[in-house]
Image (cartoon, rainbow, N blue to C red):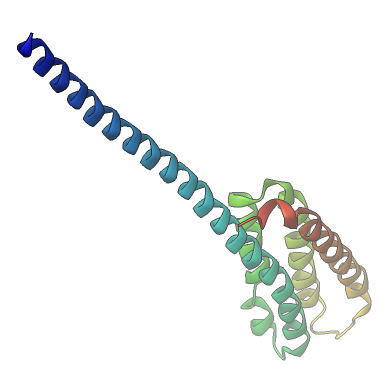
Length: 154
């Protein structure tokens, strides 16, 4: 009888220790999962802010194009901000890819038009590409605002 009670006490003690360890591990796993989700949200928010900043800085690129004095300056100044923004869209923001591509293409068209018309200093051929650039930028801004809630939850 005494042996049975000692065995019962040992079994209960061992079961308690094992269940405590299992419960502790379960909570650790849940905490890790929640932490990873939070880290992902923080990453998306950070990249979204970077994306919006790059789109804004692309206007600086356009202004710089107008100040260039040589074809070499035009050729050596690609729309890097728009390229980086497009890359971020490809990696993180699929809803913004199509408009980011349009925006990037309008940047390339402006640069090409400026190089082609550099000698003549004719700005007439630039009016349509600049208009398209502004329209694409406005649409991208609209999409950035529209998707902000989705990507800035952290």
